[in-house]
Image (tube, rainbow over all chains, first blue to last red; front, side, top):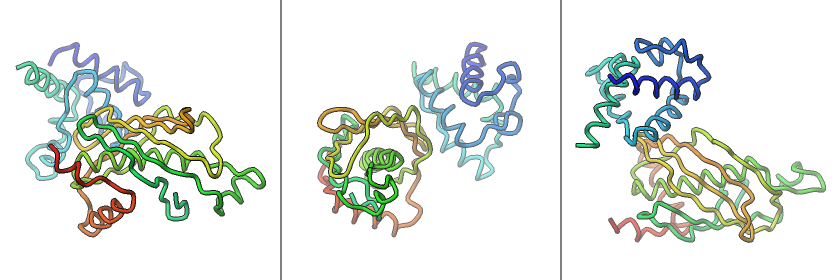
Length: 94
Length: 157
């Protein structure tokens, strides 16, 4: 995970959800630790998609979790989320 | 508009799927029980209904882009502005465009004009999901005919 990605995502979360920036850490789980609900996550997704010029595959991630093929930590722990974002940005440039 | 049926738009004037824009016409009714309360002796189109009109306008654009496979459900308004009073009998032009199509959600920008002047505008977020039931989708297709949804544009692209 690039630290600049984490900083950008943490700033987005802090601004969108009015969460103190210093409580948002790479190991924070967006839902379980930060208490972000699905509506706030829509705003966050919009801001992240815009900031990075990507389309996070939220529906695919949700389906994987619902089908037991993935656990939420893979997508909602921020350092993991940022790794996914880095991958999407890299794929876009490829 | 048929306010009592929550039909806030009358007719799709133009639907441009390539440009991802829609233009809709709606005329505020001259009479409605709503105006008896909003306000007594001073009838004004309620702001929340103007917001709903913008949501419906955006919604038909999203339905067009997904070719009736998905239904948008209103999730959030951002920077909603009610700039001027809207009164019974006024003709509204509603314009919406796509700001972003995400995965499972879409954000639009919409505005309402009266005689060319913007009276309301907002950014609107929708959750966009598969139609919950086939009957729901069929009902929307029937209603599309009522508002002159140009089905022929779905064949392009």
